[in-house]
Length: 368
Image (spheres, helix red, strand yellow):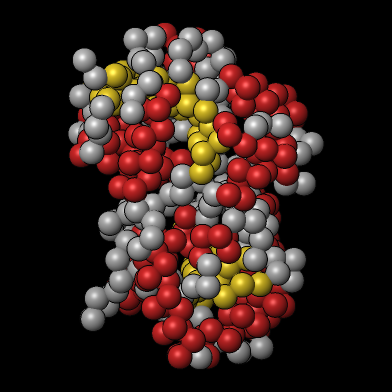
């Protein structure tokens, strides 16, 4: 009888959601030596049943005390449980794999002293790092951070990079960029940011750089910010007003998975100004769509993009402005980065990521 791997798939939004969905889809097509089951919330059961023969529905959000009891019970018959976030059940008996994408809660100054970090994230990360039989992370940078912050032996951590979805492809010969932009209320040409609005994403630096370029009339672009966070959005909107660029910045909380690739293709370039990142999936998605990237030189971003992006010091909005202006004004540079980005993005596939996960599962289950 094949061994059973249960994946806790209750979080199907954001980067962790992309990671989890793609693993489930790939295992549906290529799972050798084990069967995959999933734990889901009610609203996601229909979508996940496409990929898993067995689905257990638990109407319990993450970060709760009850999940510490419900998830071990739901996975009690599984030969291995994989939790793609650090909220793993400490009462689990049997092999446990945990994905820790980053330790931003412990490293970024904006969160280190917050109540949620002091009373949940910090103790939970330490406990889960010791409870897990193995930890998966998405970059060498994150592995080093986990080892340093949590005192985990390097041998207990495997780096498996994210992939890029098949929907992220280069723009066709006759792009419908204008129509795509209109659907979200932005005026072409435009710069694009994709991600949440938390302080470590450094969106305020992007706003200052954009203001410098826009007010000096060095670029004609609008700025589209795709992402939402009610706690932080108000201060960013206020900053737009203070900088005099409110009419040039469009905030869109969420877009569908079918629209996102079209936005990448329609944008002149993607900017990711983060102070810290575990991986930086939008960089990879933009490159796969043939969109040039300007990225922070911090954390994992150079590891992901290599020589296929322009970099800047995330603490220096003027350097960011200079790199944006340079890229906007030089068609040869855009063409070069487009070609390098397409080539670089082909090295990252969800099929390869799932295969490496499967190999790790088999090792932990005593397979070959």
